[in-house]
Amino acid sequence: MDPVLIGLTVFVILGSLAALEMKSLLSAVIAIGVVGLGLSIVFLLLGAPDIAITQVVVEVIVVTVLIRAAARVPEETPTLRASRARTFAGAGVALIAVGLLAAAFQTLPAFGSQRFAPALWYLENAPDLTGATNVVTAILLDFRAYDTLGEATVILTAVVGALAVLRRPERPKEGSHV
Amino acid sequence: MSDPQGMSIVVRVVTRWLFGLILIFGLAVALFGHVTPGGGFAGGTIVACAFVLAILAFGGSRGPGAAFARWASSLDATGALSFLVLAILGYTAGSFLHQWAARGELFTLGSTPSIVLLNLAILLKVGAGLFAGFIAVAVFEGAAGSEKGADA
View 1: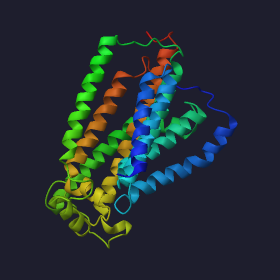
View 2: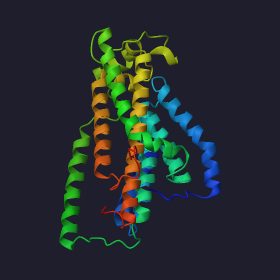
View 3: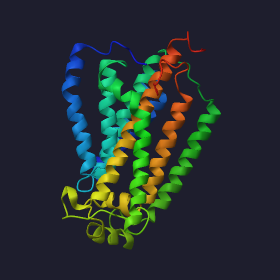
View 4: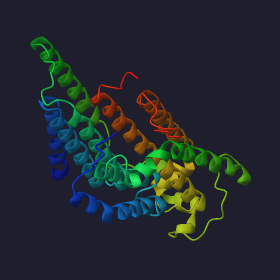
C-alpha cells in the first residue's frame, strides 16, 4: 500500500479523534474540515477525481456553514464525559470491530487487481453508447439516471424540510420567500 | 440574517473580483461534466459557495447573495422540475430518461446534449438548494441570537 495513503489515513483518523476531544466547538469544526479535506486527497490518490472534487467543495461549504453556526455558540460549552466503564466498553467494541474488519478484508482481492465484468463493460461501452466520455457521468445520468432522480428528490425534500423547520418566525415583508 | 455590515473593505473588494470567476468555474465544471471530472453536483456546490461568499462578505441585505436569497427556494424547485421535464422528454425517444437529443462527436460539448441539460438542471437544483439551506441556518441563528421577536 502507498505510504502516502497510509499517512493520510492516519491523519484523517487523528483529525476525527481531535474533533471529538476538542473543548471549543470552533476547533472541533476545523478538525472536521481536516478530516474532509484529507479524505478528498485520499479519493484523488485512489483514482476517483469526480468524488474528490465533490468531497472538497461540499467540505468547504459545510465547514463554512458550521463555522458560521459555531461562532454564535458561547466559547465554554458544557461537554458530557462518559464514565470509565463506558469508555472501556466502547474501546472493546471498537477493537472487536476492527479485528473482524481486518479478518474480512484479508479475503478481498488486492485494490485494483480484479475488475468485475459489469465494470469492464461500462468502461468499454459507455462512451459510444451515451456520448459522455466521463464514464462516471455516463453512469450517473444515463445508465443509473433513476438513482440521480431519486437523489435530486432527496435534496429537494431536505431543503424544503429545512426551510419549513428553520423558517423565520415573523414574515419580514410581503412576497419574501426566505 | 448575518451581520448586515458584512466584512472589511479588503474582503469585499476581493469578493467582487472573485465572485464572477467562481461562478464561471462552477458553470464550467457542470457544463463539461460529461467530458472531464465534475458534473452538476460539484458545479452546483461551487456556485452555492460563490453566493455564500457574497452573503458573508456583503452581509445579508446587499450584493448578489441577497438577490439570490429571495429566489433560492423557487430556483431549487425549478431545477428539480426541469430534471423531471427532461426525464419525461425521454419518452419522445422511447422511454423515461432516455437520451432524446441528437448526439455529436465525442469529446465535444455537444457530444450528448441530453446529459449536458440534465447536468445543468442538477446545477440549478444543488446550487439553489445548498444556498437555501445556508440561508435557513443563517436566519435560524439570527432568530436564536436576538431573543426578542422570536416569539412573535
